[in-house]
Length: 238
Image 1 (cartoon, rainbow, N blue to C red):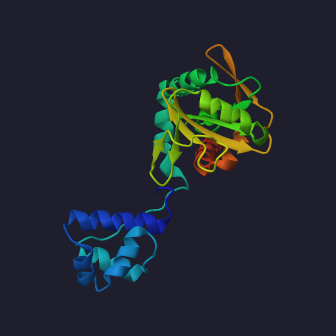
Image 2: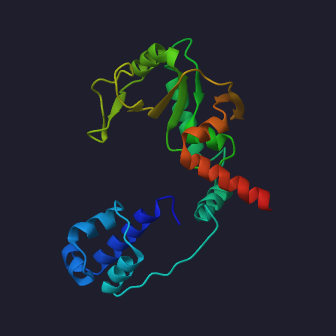
Image 3: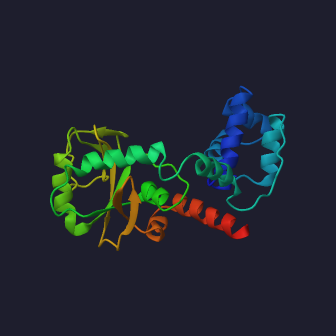
């Protein structure tokens, strides 16, 4: 089971099986006795069909559903075990993110205070999750220093949501937009907080890192919270 709502999982499975059968939505809708508009909404997860309609749809594909029940969040176990066995605070992914942060930090203005946040903060505190970029938390009062930092990072480009890509136009964090940038030093995401909490000191590669407390990281990231909760539940059951 995934973290996707059940209607979304069902819709994805229905679409996968329909496409594997080489059927258009229109043809399957006729076979199952539903409207194409309803079928489209089923597949997108925007509408949950009744069990009777589900049976008719899969029967029209020559398929039937088999239901299983598992412990909540048990779908995370394989990924947790794989990362726990082969990765951790000294993994290549962590090292890469810390190298990127180190390069960016050299450009930071005097007085700028930040805490490592997000996935990187979680894995540094023992959560088996793979970081993919540098994430930091900065106090709102430090926004002008953040602006100075962003302009000091070479070839910095800002994420533009409508383009789904990075652009070198209008990179200032003082202007509206996602606090996410890419550069030759790597990718940086920033979370603004009213004030920074006390840092959790973590030692890595003979240096001390200032990390945002895990309880706060979990509060802002449901996926990290879900993985951390599963790890705690597994530990408690041993």
